[in-house]
Image (cartoon, rainbow, N blue to C red):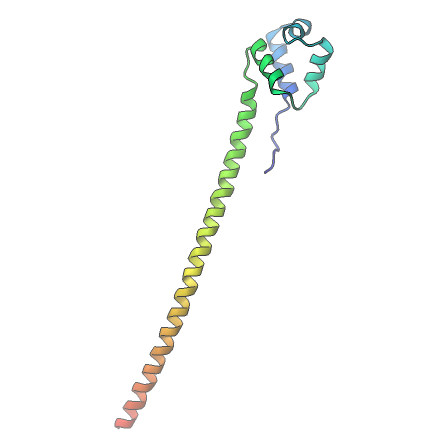
Length: 127
């Protein structure tokens, strides 16, 4: 699986904080962190879920939803891969059945040739 569309959560938090017009120092106090830590959060690609939950409450924004969007993409990709594996298994099974049918048809064809040969031989004897 390829997580090409990974969320840069720090950038999302910074954007929402800017839109909320809450000063960084006030935001830092509300999440019990220093101003320096908040600026560090803005640079993070990942974050502790407990801290993210606090940030969600303070900014009244569901940051977890960004991950859900990616998870649904991954789930769809996994389902497609699973479906193709199932299709492949079904195709292999179908191929095996065709091989069995072919062997059976070859045997029947050989018997028909023998019968035809014997009928031809009998016909020539009767002349």
